Length: 589
Image (spheres, rainbow, N blue to C red):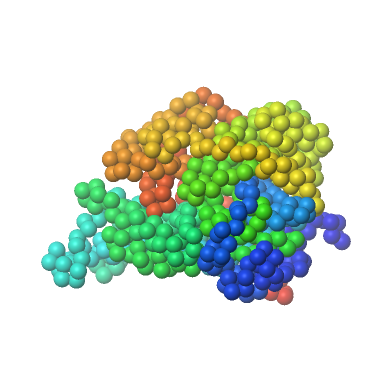
């Protein structure tokens, strides 16, 4: 605690830290000066041509950090990721973090920053959480250029004859705006933009139509950045260009798909994104290396950082620790079935983060509301409530084991926890099939508080891996959906809307049925219903809609009502953000 008797905020801790020149961090893991693209002295992109030099190095161990089903407050996956990297360094291991760039929607909404917390953070924390190296803005502009191109083509085709179009070298696309699926994006939470009408004014202002906005991290371009692969910059650019060109933005009046290449904008979109391919290098509070790259949401996209950052890190470090969004039913399942399928990389271990308060929530504890104090059930020992909620941890351990991967449970300790509560979690975790379980105090103690966890992870990585996907991608779409619902969510059945039935039939007819599936649902329950805690049973999953992300390489399956543009609460986090007299950011988290 500080002199005033309170714990300093995450931002205060980060701003009090001694930040090393990013060139020193790069040198410590074997990156040459000429392979850096500096953005000031505290962060730099690493040029992908580094893979030409290091690509023959044996890869390090690959660890995914996931969690039990979270509360609205988050349960510390990024904090644990950073703490584990620092803990591995404390026991002499060359370790590197690979995490997502946060969206400014949650940063200024409910959640606050996403750089970790306490003494396990990526720094400078304010730079991490805000503009970083501009990738988010590049994606927003590239996405909105594609949207503008579609509206412009529709507008001009509405006023020109076939002969006039041919005279300028164009063929009529006959865009059916009722089938348009490419909305605009902005990286803030703004419910007022979910449904809008564009083209109002007069004839020169466009053709009026219903449209809408998503948050930038929901853009298919963000998912494409995270899934693009290559053995150097040129090959990654080629993959990016091909993926951008394949993006389906809608259909013509006959139902045929229209792509960005049909609109002749795929090349320009790629040009706007070309510099985003280089991952950003930052540092932890203890001087460890952290790659920050891409930021797809896990509830509406696949929720993992980039393949390219992981690939660079694996050829530089002994241990690479990445993190999947939300609970293991979401980010981890997609890490395995989508990201690892695309990259060909095989993980060595899973770290399952659990907290006493989250498990008590799943045991039937009072509702947790972000911004409000916790009920006494969460701040005082309550073994029966904890025991009731441990079924959620057990289910997630079983889910991870379905992929053939060893599980280490990390109990992210809070000051209000008791030793008996920790021992109960460890005992049940081991009984459920975890290789080991460790209490970790990395938030308060940095890497020193994660040594037991680090040693457990090293042990897990020494065991042979029998990694396997949950389903083969060439199965029928419905079979893949029902496999995830049955095996991961424990659903009794699946119900398809008439629209979903039609979409599945159309996608399979168009040859898109071999794509893996990306489930879009609430993160607050293993099921599709956020009110169902613990491990629900006897429920039927409603499939409302199926969308295709051909560029990213997956089908998006929407379960129930899923918002792709969040809203702001009554007291958003931005109300606390400001500058002090010295020009330093305050109140970020």
